[in-house]
Image 1 (cartoon, rainbow, N blue to C red):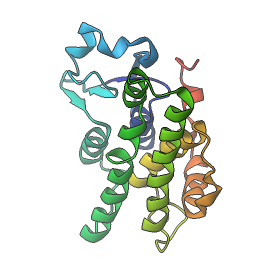
Image 2 (image 1 turned 180 degrees about the vertical axis):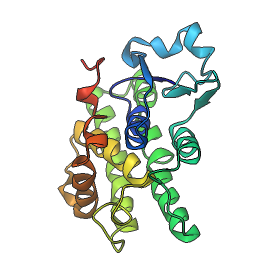
Image 3 (image 1 turned 60 degrees about the vertical axis):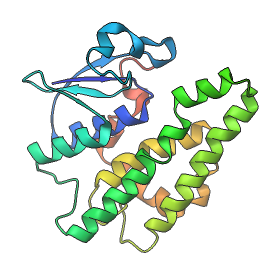
Length: 210
């Protein structure tokens, strides 16, 4: 398999964690987002959205969108499972993950922030925007799992929720968010980061880290 990504992309970070948890190997092909390499014609032929990650399987099929990639990995390599067997809990895990992957991360990603700068917003306001988005999303996520058993987001093993949470907390810190306001999220993060699969997927551990 081949994983197209970027060391600081939180979406690619999610997929790296999933691959590690499943014990799967993938060749990592970096595309420097700040240099616009994701917009090169050769990469757009792989992913017309010009986003990372994209995963090419051994048969050459291309998958895009991190949550879809992770669910495909979970379906084709079911151990350890990343979604609960119980339908209600599975829906709760997906809802938490999508609160991050659909409603928080995209609104503060590099493409959106670049557009805000193009529209003339001063840099301090751009950074304020990104911090606000993270606070809004994480505050909701804190409530979503406040009554769920730990130490992970949903119980005693990592799920899709944790794969989305850990990279988003890294984003929040980068934008100066005081994450101490989210003790339940931090509990889940600590449990996740104690696992080699999460630790080895961290941005600073990637060969293209700057």
